Amino acid sequence: LIALYRFSRPHTVIGTILGIISVSLLPVQTIADLTPTFFMGLLKALVPSVLMNIYVVGLNQLYDVEIDKVNKPDLPLASGDFSMETGATIVSISLLMSMTMGIRFKSPPLFLALFISFLLGSVYSIELPFLRWKRHAFLAASCILTVRAVVVQLAFFIHIQKYVLGRPLVITRSLMFATAFMCFFSAVIAVFKDIPDVDGDRHFGIQSFSVSQGQERVFWLCVYMLLFAYGAAVIVGASSCFMPSKLVTVLGHCTLASFLWLKTQSVDLSCKASITSFYMFIWKASEYFYCLPL
Image (cartoon, rainbow, N blue to C red; front, top):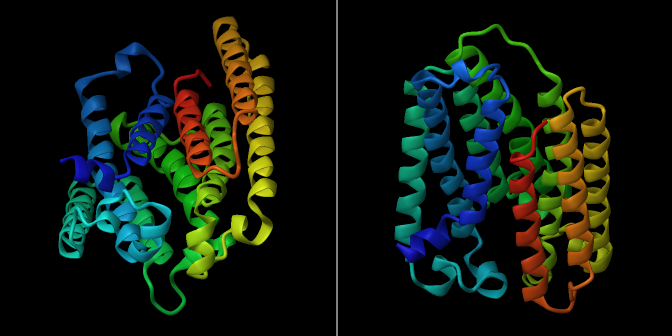
């Protein structure tokens, strides 16, 4: 079970769950909307999405075993805790269950989100001509940004608003802000995740931004992008007409930005553990964002 937990890359699973819950609450207008029907619709979004998440991260590990022996030797396939056959079985079952649920639940935006995640997750990792997009920095970042910032926000919002609550589609200000904000966060995650992996990536020909531009330059680019996103969130929050929302949003994002800046002062770019710790902090910061009002 511990090996399966590590295989699923739990920080990505938590991010997926919180992201879907957060965006699913945006169409809710009153407490009366929080009916059993709503929670069943939310569950129908969460379960296949988590399974698809396991497919995507598992597939990447299947094709990255040799790289992970250098970059992430504690992962189950790289460490030998799982055989390749076990990994392939988990990945196949997760994909089959996810797509089956997506079809059976009869929600077009839900199925589309799962299908796009499957498509981009596959072209990101699979070693075939014209695929293996992770070798190219721009294509790799585009895959992650498209799924986490655009597909998750739009598809699950429409799923809840139209196919669960039964309301006509209305794109709200909060949805546009959440999508824009997560574009920054997802871009940072997509770029930053390769900073601690430069040795293995360089050896195996993965042209990440960290390999081509250098760790320090990419690190500070990510920090400034996050600070810009927090600054924009503060401005948007300050424009709210609802005073409690204004206070929580402004103070919350100011606090997160302050913690971010303080955390940067203790990062040692020559220490892989230090960089990885900061990367996990970025994931936690994105999770805190989901808890703040929009």
